[in-house]
Amino acid sequence: MWKSIQRKAKAFWKEEDGLGTLEMLLILAVVVIVAIAFREWIMKWVGGLFKGADTQINQQTTIDGSSIRPSASATP
Image (cartoon, rainbow, N blue to C red):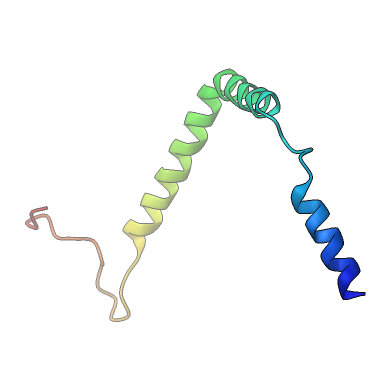
């Protein structure tokens, strides 16, 4: 049984029927076209995600109740 599994694994490894360059280029082209078609929606969605994350981070407090936001006098 082990020999059968080894034989099938080797045959699978040597098989050359995989994704070719043309298929990869077509997939990439479709992704680019979709991104261009929905770019405004994608930008609004990503902006909303970052704004929501920023709001949640700014509302966080430590265990003792103090804010984790850096003070205005802190220099980057």
